[in-house]
Length: 159
Image (cartoon, rainbow, N blue to C red; front, side):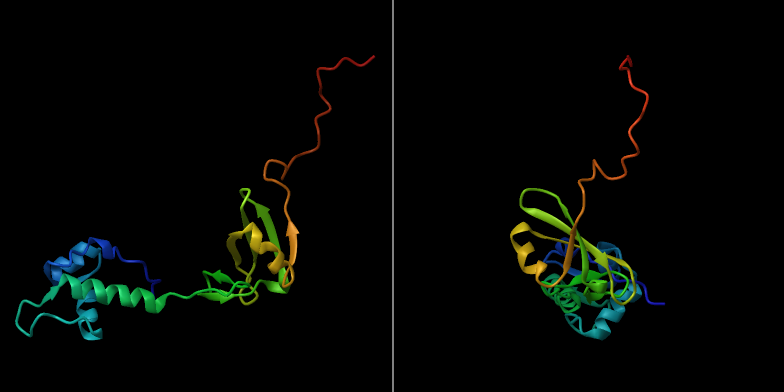
């Protein structure tokens, strides 16, 4: 099973510096074999001599390009499913809406493919255009969710 890829700390790479394989691995928290695979996948070393050295600017450009290639953007009516690793539409067109702030709402639904919970945050102004596509259900504020039946024990004296 392939491990999910994580975002590498590209900002740690200094453009004017040169790095060898072990330094790159230590700097980015990766394994040396990962860096060697990057060299086979197109990361350009300074020359063919040993030890293999890479310019910081080249390393930074290579990693940035890899991250851009993996990035997926969602259409306005899609949510990103973390299990499917792809943009998906909610199942049955049903979306729950909870108001976060005066300008932001949180949307939640289920992935139509795998049934995983999917979430998205949008501006409140974009909500009417989404209402044309989905069946929106507004949730009660969190402080009211899960309230039990009122207590019959009160300090009021009956009379």
